[in-house]
Amino acid sequence: MDKYYLGSVSEITKYCEMYLPLVFSQTKEIYKINILESNYEGDHLGVQTSSTDEYEEYFKLLSSYMNHKFTNILHGRRVAMFSFMEEFKVQNIKFNGIEIFEPKKDSDTQKLKLGIEHLAIVVKNFDDFAKEFPEKYIGKIAEYPEGKFLKTKFMNLVEIEFRDRSLI
Image (cartoon, rainbow, N blue to C red; front, side, top):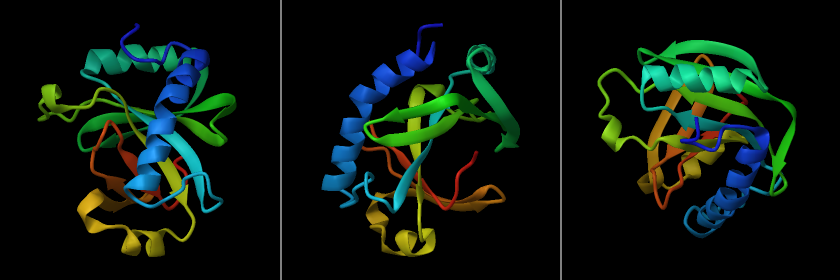
C-alpha cells in the first residue's frame, strides 16, 4: 500500500511537513486565521479512501502502528478513528489521530479528494468563530452527537474542518 502517505508515522510526518505550510499560508491569507495561535489546536487528519477494499486495507495498516479508538457508521459508510501512540507534532501543531472513511455509497469516486482529504482543528469559542467565518468559504456546517463542525470549501488542495471539540 503506497497510494497515500500512511505507511508509517515517518511517512505521515514527511507529508505533513510539505502540506501544512500550504494550509497555514492559505488560512492566514484567505481566511485571515492563524492556526498556530492559542485559540486553535490540532485534532486529526481525515483520509478518504476510494473503496471498501481500500478502506479495509488502510484500516489494517493503521491498526499496525496506531490505536483504534472507534468506528461509526456515518451517511451509510464506515468512519474509523485512530490515535497516535506517541505525540505527533508537525510545525508546532499537535494532531491526536487519523480519521479514515469509505466513500459514500452513491458518490462518484472520480470527484473525491483521495488520501488526506482534510485536517481538523479544534477552535475555542466555536459558535462565535462559526458566526464570523466568511460564508463564501464554508463548504458544510453541521452538528452531530460527536460535536459541531464547519468545513471549508476545498481550495488550493486545502480543506479544513474546524470543530468545537476533539473527536478523540
